[in-house]
Length: 594
Image 1 (cartoon, one colour):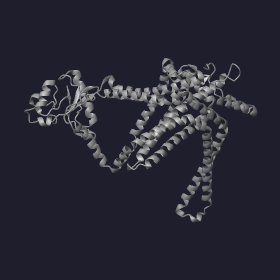
Image 2 (cartoon, one colour):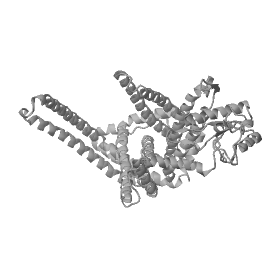
Image 3 (cartoon, helix red, strand yellow):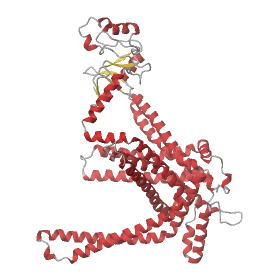
Image 4 (cartoon, one colour):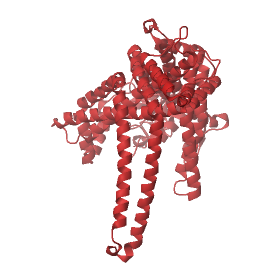
């Protein structure tokens, strides 16, 4: 019987017997031969029984087993054999546990009689070593990981330190990164377009007489394809240049916001540790969810099938608890992530709208958490529930697509993929809108719907600025992730290259690079949240304040310089500056500024 099925079914049977009071309290699972395990096939070759007590001392003979059963009311042989027949029946050797019966641990492990004899656990190690020795490649990879574990831990710590340092210094290199991105995009688009036109001209000038007759059609198709590619690349390059020409002034705001975001992390250092608390909360919830799932797997009524095994059939409302449990997993996970977004938004809003940074609260992060718990849990719950309503249909369609893979026709496959793609895009848009709605809630203390409407208005009215922040800014953060991964990988290559105690260090290097990317993504995602929050704060600041006495700006000096430069450009451009002025419109009137 498979291990998973047998453990679950025996556990169900024990709980059923316990609830009915059959043969005392059958609360533990006992294996007749606990060391007879088949790890490769994930099967347990031993018969499992429900017993009232686990043996605390080693039982060497069948007489000891019989005495244990009569004393504790716990029969260790199969149910077909009575305790009085343990020493007299000829079937006792096959129906009773393997002798000697090892003593069990004082505290049963998950209601299972776990032997304390170390030789049993050696079986696991022996099977694992045998499996590894049969696969030389796997053996070399595992040995490489084990011999370089200190280096792996050190490199993981290095990636963590590099991520923290980058979050502080990125404000100093943001301008350089923007110019690097701009130059690379220009050179890449021009170079690609030029190469395509050169290949087309070269192909067109080549004499047709040199081409074999059977290849003439192929050459014409290739020439036509090159022309299409060259024209498409030219159109793309022209559109890209026009976009960059229109957005060149908006990029300055992105640079300024990144500069201010670096200052935020200096004044609010606890923001750096926000991913740890979120991850810890998610792990706790997932552990609870899995434990509840195990309890749901042992519910139902016991029914004996034709093979003599006990099956548990779920009926009534319990059969729908699986759906409820899955929805809870998605909703609560999104709720925890939304709490992180609201916490970050509240702390950054407090920083922005405090004129004298020396008067900041002692712990703005804890103050933001306090406001979240007291006032904004409903807002976070509603926003996460909307994401859940979109995520569940997408997951259902993905499951249907995986089940019908290779069976559906081309039209059905296209429709399924289109629906999945549309739902994915909708989920991303709602995630972004929700994040800005939480910021609007932190600024204006309004409910979720009002905040979402206000956030949508400001995003639409500042569409070009939002596009600049989300394209240039995201690419800058992507370059930061690549920088951390490459730096950690380079350090790993240099350190592992001087190690002589391993055989293959490819797997350790992959582990280090994956961990470095995960760490960089977590930290720079917080940086991205801070930039988005600062943008909304900047927008509402320019709406209600103009720098005159009594209406002074809350913004940082770097952002003030950007506003002054924009005003000078508007005066010089005359009517051309009206469009830029309209882009500074933030939220709808009636919202408070603090």
